[in-house]
Length: 375
Image (cartoon, rainbow, N blue to C red; front, top):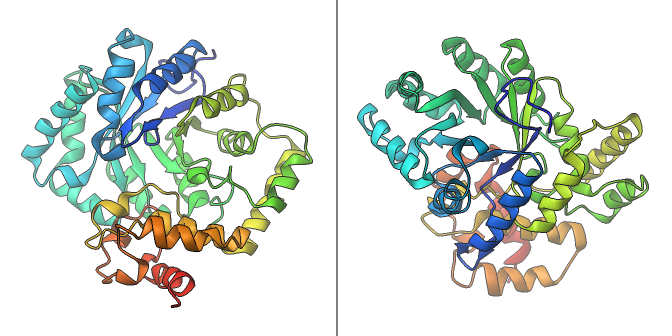
């Protein structure tokens, strides 16, 4: 496996994102995750990415049981993150960091990222000296590289990288649908990374599965190429940019793992014909006016009405794409039978403050209610 040109400890360009692991009910399926981790490492790859809040706190222990306990430490590279919801002052950070090491079963993190940085929480991180603390932990050998994951406009990233030039890596959202989207601002954010000579980690290359579950007209565009899977085109698009260190894929079953390995081991960028197909698919998505939610589920935890916001958005998107009457049944009898309906939203705005896509969730929930709650 080819060594990474930015960080020699990383093998290849595909990274295993551990936010969407295989599940057995409400718990991570350790047996399946072990098999997937084995396939990943046996292929020569080694980069795993997690955060404390992933899968309601179940991702870190899964890393411990399925990776850290089963492999020599230098056999894998592990990234974790500092999320603002878990500290309120500077003195909270080190105990939280130590709890993450213990949860993952390791004594250092290869990469430690200031999580989901935006204009709002960046001020919290600065006030609590979070960056300074991370750099101190690096000097102590508990972190190998300090970076950020980012969810805001390009000017905010430019400010952060100017104020903290020792940041070593930046994780951004980039996929072929969002690349020129003004809301996500991927293209401009990416260009700021190049301006500051920062290696780039790509997250959401398949847009939470949206670029796999394509409308029929988009499927036909790729099918006519007689080439790889729908996911493979999305991953290869993201990996083909200058300065990209690795592309994260949140794999939740062995089928996805095998498909990603087939397209990313021995990676080749998209050729001209494939790039043209991607442009056509982008146009199809724009014409459908779907809600660009990636189902990260950050919004669900703090909702006072317990509304399953990503699921309701997915339901509406499916209704628009397939005109499927089953979505009405699913909305009424599954998604809202024990959780809040879209019309239950009290407009508190907590969801919008934390949404990485900067969606106008309150207004979108009104559209959901108009579609599914007419009676």
